[in-house]
Length: 185
Image (cartoon, rainbow, N blue to C red; front, side, top):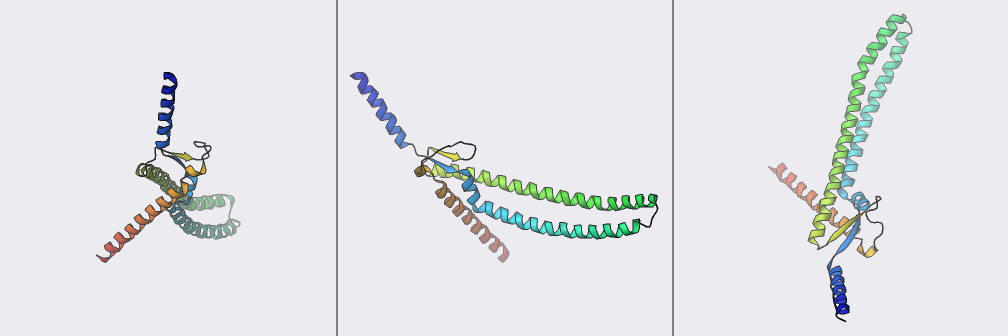
């Protein structure tokens, strides 16, 4: 009888400990996709990419016009002279092409850096949110399978998304206030 009472006491204690733990999960992809900072970064780089594409297309048109011109000139030259002029043409355009590739790579690196910072900020925010709101665990649901299933009542994705966007909006408005104050000085 004494063993049964001890077993029941252990079960009750275990059950009460379970109830005190606050556990939830967030859909990492959804929070990141709906995070206004990420949306703003994507828009910024779409604009940068569009501007770069215009420059690249403009340079491409100049290149094509010069190709047509040089082709006409080459047809009246000797084979040796054609070779020399072709080489000069290639030497002229090679640094321009390299510069365009370099600019494209820099833009991609900057974009990736900023997107990495979004992931870090979301992780830090969820950690702080969990501490502030008394969670024992907040799991991340993603395609890799860290949470394969979760009861919808434990899904705090929307709440976290709203909170992080509100936090981002507050920081954005603080930045605007600071910029306005600096402009007035």
